[in-house]
Length: 91
Image (cartoon, rainbow, N blue to C red; front, side):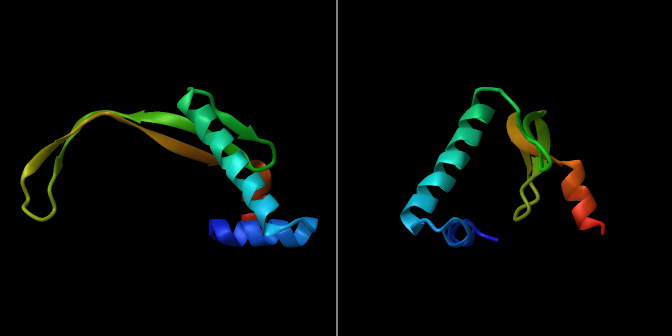
């Protein structure tokens, strides 16, 4: 499912215009992103937890040339599915 499909589903389910649904979805995504940027974790009960993890600096390879490249440390989002999601997937 892509973002536009999520907006369409929300508009259909809740009987709101697509403009309102788009604003709701964007607000939710922006709020989650800002919380992660601030160093917080986002816990959505029954769905899962989104947190930030740090990947250490490492030496990588350029796939085109095979040359060694230094990859700097970076932060990446990490999602851990909740119990209800795991149960729904494994029914």
